[in-house]
Length: 170
Image 1: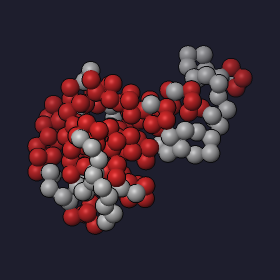
Image 2 (image 1 turned 90 degrees about the vertical axis):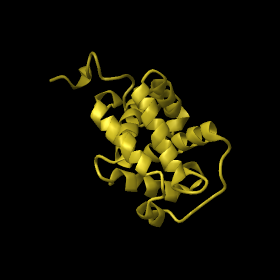
Image 3 (image 1 turned 120 degrees about the horizontal axis):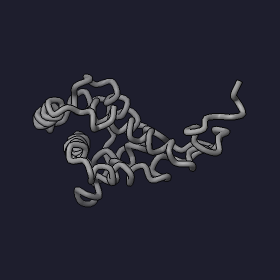
């Protein structure tokens, strides 16, 4: 679901929930025992965590690059500059996420990051972790597959719209 569909009521619920959620979650703490050294400064920590998060959603493989390699994290930051609600959700969401483990999300091992994102994907549908996961997954997939660098191995040379796939017309 795109951020623009987040109602004011839902945003306020997320914001209020996040204020109560700023303490470590025992469910999350049990899922992620690994801890590493902290990163530098809040802005750098946010950017590192966002980059790591989108790379968990869309990792590199033998044919295609990871999300951050095609600039998905930078596009999400650029999008947030024009949308106050989205920017606020990212700010509150990543402050919460990084506060859940010493050193923050980006400092976890890859396996631990995957477990955290998996936990977020299964959290209550109206919770901050789930909303953050859902919105970042939507935006990451949209930005990633709009970039031609992600098409390697897909046997396409251009987007299917507006002319479709003429060689498959019946």
